[in-house]
Amino acid sequence: MIKIRALRQFSHYHAGNFGQFEVREVKDEYAEALIGLDLAEEVQDGQIPQPQPQPQPQPSQKKGAKK
Image (cartoon, rainbow, N blue to C red; front, side, top):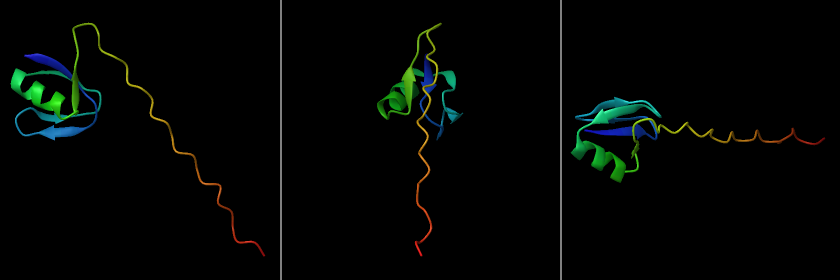
C-alpha cells in the first residue's frame, strides 16, 4: 500500500472518490496509475504538504458605455 495525496477531486473505479488534497493509502498499482496521470502525489508518513493557495482571478474593470 502506498500513501497518496490527491491533487484535485476525482473518482477512480477501484479506489473510490477523492477530495482535493485528501490523503489515503491505496494499492500500489492504483497509486502508480494515479501518480502517472498527475492526479495524485506520493507522500511519506509525517510529510504531508499543506495545500498551496490558488490565485484568485481579478474582477474585470469593465465599465459601462460612455455617453
